[in-house]
Image (cartoon, rainbow, N blue to C red; front, side, top):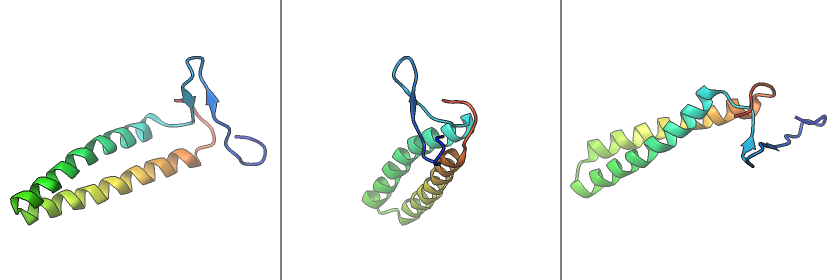
Length: 85
C-alpha cells in the first residue's frame, strides 16, 4: 500500500496479479462463484418444472452466497499486510 492509502498492484515474475489475501478468502470467493452457477441452474430448473419451493431455496442460498463472497472481498480489501496470493 502506498503512502497515501492507495493500493498498488504488483505483478509476479509470471505476470500474475499479487494482492494480499488469505487462503480462506480465496476459497470463499472461488467456491462461492462456483456454487452460484449451480444455484442458478437449479433455480431455472425449478421455474421450468413448476417447483416454487426448489426455486425459493436456490434463490435464498444464492443470496447467502453473494453475501459471503461480498464479505470475503471486503476482508481482502481491508487487509493491508500479509502474503501475496
